[in-house]
Length: 108
Image 1 (cartoon, rainbow, N blue to C red):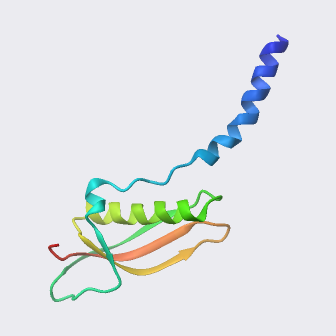
Image 2: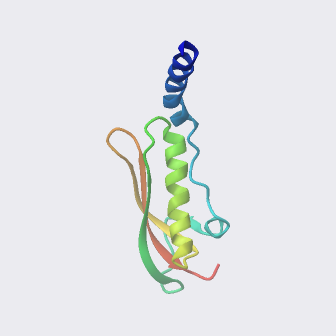
């Protein structure tokens, strides 16, 4: 019985550490084809939508930013876009990253 409690205690100690093993959202093969730009020639591109990618795991800004950008690219690809013009990005209170952009299909 004592061994059971010791094992249970050790398991409970390890659970909070598993949050540190968080990996960023992976960009899909379709999302890899999406270009991130600061502007496009709107006469040569078709407007699709506005998308947002966000992440807040609370311990690693670089992982949060990568994950948020990957989510933005994945969402743009799902909507049929090949280009995202970043409108703004920001950190959130207490950590996190948010990227918002306009999705276009430019035929790249």
